[in-house]
Image: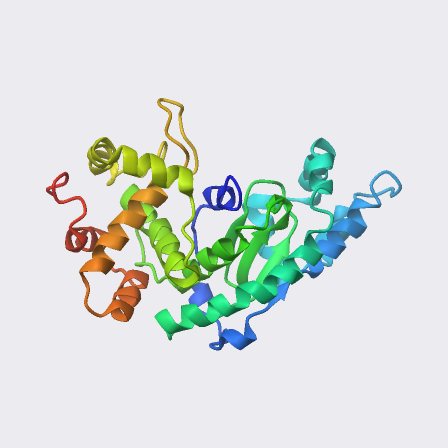
Amino acid sequence: MKKCFLFLSLCFVFYSSDAQKKSFPKSPTEARFITSDLSNFWQAFDKIGTSTQNPFEEYIKNGTIGLQGFIPNRIMSADELLKMVMARKSDYLKTRNVDSLIKAKEKLIKPYFYALEYWYPEAVYPPVYFVMGRYNSGGTSSANGLLIGAEMLTNLDHLAELVIHESVHFQQKFPNGGNTNLLQQSIIEGSADFIAELVTGLKGNPKANNYGNAHKDELCREFADLMDKQNFQDWLYGTSGKDKRPNDLGYWMGYEIVKSYFDQQSDKKQAVKEILNIKDYKIFLRKSGYLNAYYKG
């Protein structure tokens, strides 16, 4: 996300169980990219300074159900969006033509949904909504589909990994109740990266991967001490600056745990199913064997 994977570091994974209860297409042919919110945004944008009211009220009012899911904790309100647009107007303008670029990429990305179907025949394909937000989330999910913050898409080179990463999150089933700790959240993110790589053949997050591989021993020791805690600092979604580590080392750690588990299984499709339906993250970690030399719990 520093390209597209910067976006993933900005979205905390709180996927509602309601998303799993809705009926979504089970065929990749029915996967849809919805970009109507983008044109609505630019219509509002062009009224800044000429309208007596906040033009983004209309953007929100006329928004898709995807945009409505992007308002809580992200857009917040039309007033908050206007403040951000005025502060970063030149940055928003860089994405003025992103709609046409997305449509061109859609034809290249859709075949990856067939690869996802190969690895996980039970997959569903919710709509992918492209919306304009406030530079605080590049990708997330709601009960109604996948949500992509298009203002972040100054470079679409990694859009496929982003869309498939979020699509994988949508397939994941999470245990009910309890708070998410560092281990669980890292495996959730790392498994989305791992399966996205299976599907696309593309490995993302190079800075975290390179740093993690170069500092494996010390990071494994640190993670083993912290993984039961609910503090994600220095591992997910931001760093304290205590050293030169990049953002999102939790993605790297989760990826390595999942890969270790996957490599040990003879039935690879069944392994993917198990990765998407983890019931106990401690047991999964133990079966992976990845931190056995560091964690004895």
